[in-house]
Amino acid sequence: MQKPECHGDVQLRNRVTGNCSKRTSSGAQIKHRTTVQRSKSSSPTSSPESAGKLHPRPSDKLNPKTINPFGEQSRAPSAFAAIYSKGGIPCRLVHGSVKHRLQWECPPDNLPFDPLLITLAEGLRETRHPYTFVSKEGFRELLLVQGAPEKAVPLLPRLIPVLKAALVHLDDEVFERGLNALVQLSVVVGPSLNDHLKHLLTSGSLIIIKSKIPTYCSICC
Image (cartoon, rainbow, N blue to C red; front, top):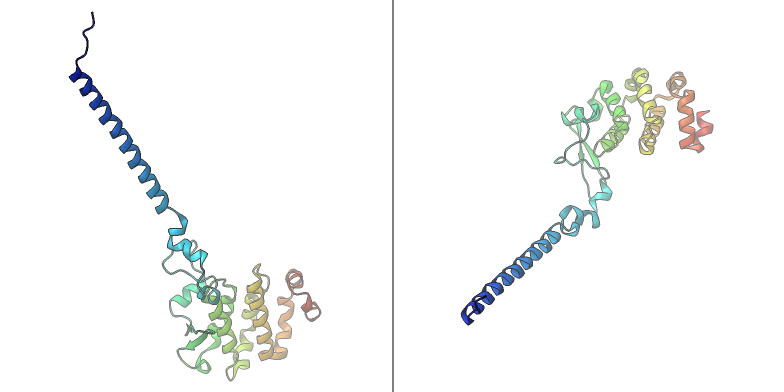
């Protein structure tokens, strides 16, 4: 025969049951708060990097494809980048509020063209800042010095293959820099360039040039 429970036993059981339910409820609330805090902390809008992507800086337009010196490089630096980093190019980029310019370590008139002009021509194939600007502007300014024709003509056999590589490059900006450099070189050396055109304007390179700038077809042909 089952013994009836006394009033004290019933109160004790109710108290234990109530405590267990309170602990379960408080545990669920703590877990819910933790989940909400984690979701807020991992929200993409709270990240400085994502905020920068949503609100681009004005300097991003001035310096496209700028190298991050603190980021991991996915590929080894090019020959031009390595030479520039070691001080092999006697000029440095000076950032301006409106446009950039080059500051030469010594007057360009006193610099030998060999191998500096060829190195700058190789840099025309770069696709990242500051190498794109340094190579383009350095090549142009070096051809403006006094006595440039006498210094540039002996280098034509080595310059033409480098410029041709820029002209057949898949990047349109590289192609444009190569074409501008070729025009600048032709102005300086004049008819001396004619003997090298057959090496520059081969059938393969002509097809690529014609596909990129139809307006120059008559000149190339």
